[in-house]
Each structure stands twice: as structure tokens, then as C-alpha cells.
Figure (spheres, rainbow, N blue to C red):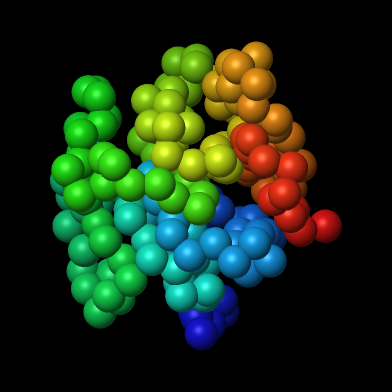
Length: 173
């Protein structure tokens, strides 16, 4: 088990309360296959439940750093991708995931992180978008809401937007 006290929570990472929420959400739904955009603290949350993680990173230097960080974690599969093009990763293009967590690439103009969210929506019934305290991410959530996705925003931390299709998903209280 990961010792949360050893994890460094930085200003741009998920918060401790968001970390706990991710751990609990994955646990109570028995999610095992996770796609994430932006490896980091969230990766450790998924490892707590022994998830298979496919993690995408757009920045070459950060990709190298995260490869070193997770070199001894056989459940973590890291891939470098181009954030300015359609996402094409042969190993996962046809794969479905229990859940997708999006914390990259960095948010910008609205709608923010749209390519990541579109890619996620084609591969899962639930995706979470970090940094919904920013208007650009809120706009992205609103677009999916208009396209028949249910959604809500966690009001703690940097705010995670949750988009989902199935009512059978259990959410932590």
C-alpha cells in the first residue's frame, strides 16, 4: 500500500482530499483499468487499488521524469503523445477503461482539455476532469452535459468535474 504521508502534494497536483476521493471511488466500484492524462499523484491513488494504469504525458521532460518515478511499478504503462493532434496510441486505441482521469495537458482557452475529454468519452462511461475551479474546464463539462452525459463538480480542492453515463456508478459521500 502507498503511504500517503510520503507523497508530495504540490500546488498543481490533486489535493489530499481529492486523492482520498479517487482511492475510494476506484475501490467501491472495483475499477481495475484506468486511463489517465498526466501521471503524478493521481497515479499513486490508482496504485493503492492495484489498478492497471495507462498514463499519457505530452511533455517530453516530464515523461522522462515520470518514467523514472514509476520504473518499478509494473502496473503503470506510460506513453508520450502530442497534445496538438488527435491522440493515436496503438497500444490503447481500441481499449475500453473502467475510468479516465484527466489532469493534462495544461488547461488553456475554453473549452479546456477537449481532445483529452473526447478521447476519454469514447473509451469509458466515467471520466474525471481536474481543475474545474477554472472557467475553461467548467465549459468543457457543460459541453458533455449538453451531449447527454450526467455531471457534477466536487467542491473541494481544485475541483474535479465528474462526467458519467451509468447510474450504477457508486460515488463516495
